Length: 304
Image (cartoon, rainbow, N blue to C red; front, side):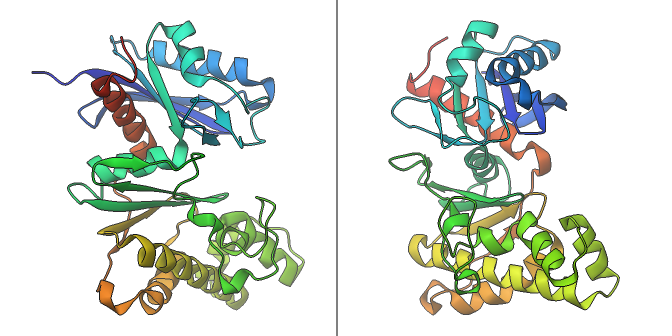
């Protein structure tokens, strides 16, 4: 029996990607700038147009989107400010109106986690934690064949674990002391600017570190150590088979510094917990979104 053809969307504040996926394999894909400042209606119109441009006859659509998804209602909550009027949006309903397809929506990093757990670096393993390091630090947990969402949809948000390196530092979520405040891309860049007075972004910090800049090297090492400490806390609670790390800010220097801090803070009884790079690259969230749609069809949560 041929696996169903599914449409997948990865909606971000700057770009939206669309793909046709079958059995975890991306058959064709496209992407374009997200009309984020034009509001949710424009974003959904744009997303639907991208899906239509791919052709084919998908039976459902899965969406990875920034923000939390209320498990009870399917509505976006705690949504990103990078897309105007995004909070409270019914993404599956909006796409059904535009595409006449049933669908599901999940947090973008939870989609990344599902893709990597089922078809990527965690394939075949019972318990997989996914972590994406970028403008923020997100995460997800896939255990016993299920993506854990939690009561409010926030399960796996590793970026908001407290670490000693971040004591007193304000986090974008409104609290203080979270690892995102020191290890996310903008946090590292801001720390470099504070030390040198030079405005930079993370790629420039990385470039300077590789050119021998000691301040840049130290900041990446500190950020990596903070990330490793946070991931160890998650490992000590969940006892995962593997932790998969991806995202645009998961540069080799960061991961190299994370590994020893992670090993030092993990309970010895766990043994070595593999901390590995993501395998699916930019397709991870698309593959995960398609997997979520497939599961929703199989469970009857959505119908054609």
